[in-house]
Length: 282
Image: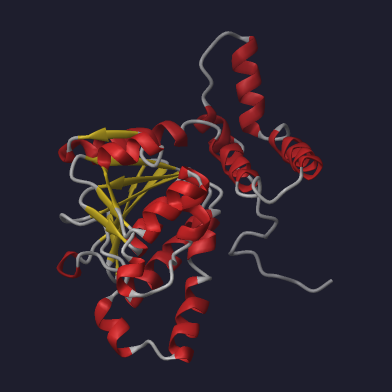
């Protein structure tokens, strides 16, 4: 069943949540409505551990054209921009750090903030029409949507500088060569390939992978001794999970692990009572 949000729609496919940008008339630009909807969906995923992977894509011929130009012409005064970025800070960092794998399927242009949104995913499948464009300095705006965080980590500082300063574009083949996309497929096959990858990750130790993501995002600013500590703390959690127990048993028994079944039969508690249980004061 498809669930509608302003400028977004979602659909559940087993353990995978499909999230589609759905404002084709505006080339899926990051309107206020779309950003609100993305924030709401991200929060729902954070609270729903039956969602083990997310597949992010878009309807129409453009993945995302970036900022909403109509809004920018009316709301570029200091306090308006400040409020907008305070709002963005409640969306983009939680999406980047979401403790489940996120796969992105891109067809057509990913421009400016659309590029930033695509780079927030863990894995990206590019259609042959995909085109990744900076565009920030052409507008005279600051690079945003966490592109200054994600892009240098993926392609390196020198390539990021050259790309941004020259308002450059990368086609699908270049994106794959640079490691932005893991594969290039015909546009008609993007969703098939992207969903297959999302399901493969969902059927793996998805929560342990989500834990590893948290540490990977710290790796460029963390000392070797601190990272050793983080790995140790992470391993304490990982090895106490149903996913680890299943993976270890499967290896010993020489069979394929069924991480999804193990997680489903041993759901994690968030420490809160069921919603129908009244809270009492002790």
